[in-house]
Image (cartoon, rainbow, N blue to C red):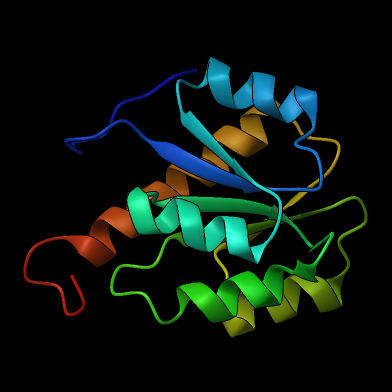
Length: 138
């Protein structure tokens, strides 16, 4: 289920979990995405200061914060990554909040390969559109 886009770089995702679930790691590697891992907002800042990462996949809460802390940080970036939030029990309130505040999507756990692949593709496509030459902010 790997894929390539017109991008001049390999697709990359930054995962933010206390511990990245092994099944998710297997899915991401099977999709040929480069995976960078973070455990808190400080790690996110560090990774994004040295790498161009188009998608962040984070648990709704983690050791020192939540997806909102990551969204606050990436909102100040010139070409912010698309944020996908995961939860074991996503409800309508979380879904609405993520989308209304600027997140890209939500993925329910346990992870299903097809859902992960489709959501990552969608996020990457949007990021590429947002960062294309001639687009404000790119």
